[in-house]
Length: 337
Image 1 (tube, helix red, strand yellow):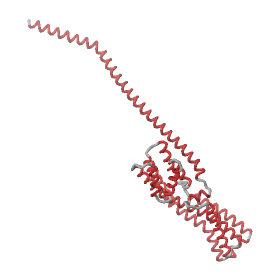
Image 2 (cartoon, one colour; image 1 turned 135 degrees about the vertical axis):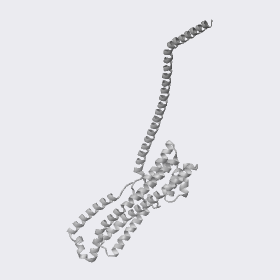
Image 3 (cartoon, rainbow, N blue to C red; image 1 turned 90 degrees about the vertical axis):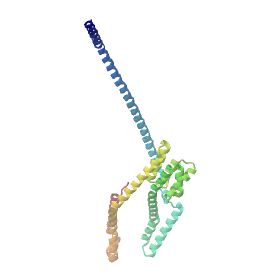
């Protein structure tokens, strides 16, 4: 009886195992298919997600590219407009140059002073015994040449002072804006507490605002009395910030660093070219010094150049070659930064 039950159990177990094997064999392919389908679906979803991320990133890059291109186009337009304005603002007229000196001098007073200086030179040269033609030439030079040279000297000195102080004024504006002051108040701060000639230029900006001009337009008017590339950079930064927005304090801070680096580079170039400038001055002055010394020791030897027609030709050719040499040396030692 016990053996029969054991045999029956083995038969039942064997039948169950056989049935399970048959069922597994039948369902294995379907299970593998569903597993592969699930894995494929997961990969597709992941690919779609990556594709969406890539598309979003590409859209962001395209948007940034469009904004950058728009900003570049606006900057180019502003630069063209600024160049067109500079043709009329930064002119070379005598009236404009007198205004750039910072002096309250009218054209009438300038002409009166020039005429007085020329007359004084004419009388002084007549007194010391110079011939009439030479006295007229000296009066002409002192009436037309010397006053304009003085104006150029004053303009250059004022521009150097402005470039020396302008980065410090930009630093004050950056700190003022970071502390919460608006741009208009920062400009007023420079106009009231700054150092000359920056103080006077920013006062003109405030005066331009009082007559109805905007801050970018008022800053652009600085080119009338200070036609420098640094001032042009400043006005462009203000104009871009007013149109496109952005961090003005950071932009002005970067501009201040650029201006300081430009000044350092100019000073370095000036120091490196100083030896060449000294050599050029010595070489250019040497013929006149030698001629003067020879005239003082042997006047008759030098007077031949002034009395003989061949001496006139020699002096003319010498003057032409001296002028060519001076121009060549000047171009060799002058650098624009």
